[in-house]
Length: 480
Image 1: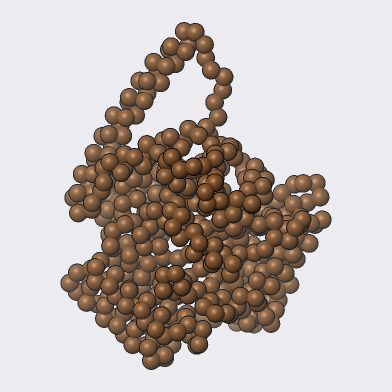
Image 2: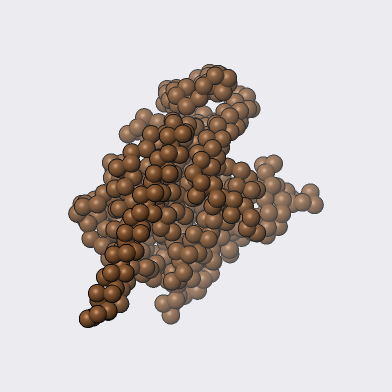
């Protein structure tokens, strides 16, 4: 939310509290010290912004120095206030850093999608809080969002953990069956339960404790078949999964009527059990922080506030540490500098490195970053094309045309020709409802080419800033 927007701020824990005010000579000394520190910070930020503008100019990236200064000032101002900000005009709320990056223009669109992906309260024992997250919540800086990511907190009051898990299982099965297929949407994957042994399903390997992935038909049947490492077949039931739900998520393909395009919409569930003694226990063993979410309904503030009180005083540090491990992973193990950039943006804005964060904000608005969207939407298109009559060919063809224009704008020379060629083949396959195997090959080629271009762009951009380059080199040295 922009500074000055009519809002109310409340404290949800964390930094920002101050003690009693000093008096007498202590006041003068403290004021002098504060003034010196402030002047030092201004000089540091001025120098950092100057270096970042220089790096951006070398890359040919346009960065508005005044806008960057205003954003940094807004972040610094918000950092001295409460952690939870409520926009009284729209009824949305979230952490102060999330609200600074949220634009309400698409709010009606997200609320309409929420009718499909969101879960209903079952008062008084089941209360929910639905939010948008990731690039969907950071709508001011993500000109090319890949997906419509939702995140939902579900608190279940029950006498036992087993009863809470059963209630969650019933809710997820009911949601899956109710939204399996409908006008402009189709459910294609449900994560529920954890595998007790290694094996493969549909040719894809899974490990112990990895999430079970269900199709709507398997949910309807209440069972799935997998192949274990010894070659034997195992049958897991929905009841088996209920004993240990683990990480829960649902994925849909949705025809986004307001934009005339397809979208992958997902909802990650953070489910907690509240026992008779009032103790709150996350069913997957981990209570998620709330630094990347914008909640869609102010009526859910009571349950949200109740849950975030359970977060430890070290939540920000833990959150940054988790992101830094992911930065290491996507720098060392599975190089993907687009993912590195997204995580670094959150690391820097949460740890007060606003100049570096301001630079990364600009990267997401460049044409090459649209290829991140291309890579994500290709799979959405393929799934929609396989679904028969649920999605009309014209919508899917228009989507490919949009991706072709993105590729032309972002690439040059042989890379452009290769990408456009793959997209044209995919367009033809969709128009003719071509063979799924041929379409899968075209999709894989497009995704590989898009992610290669994105990876190269973000690595070059991040390494161009000395402070960010030094940070990445330090991350690489760390043990996992």
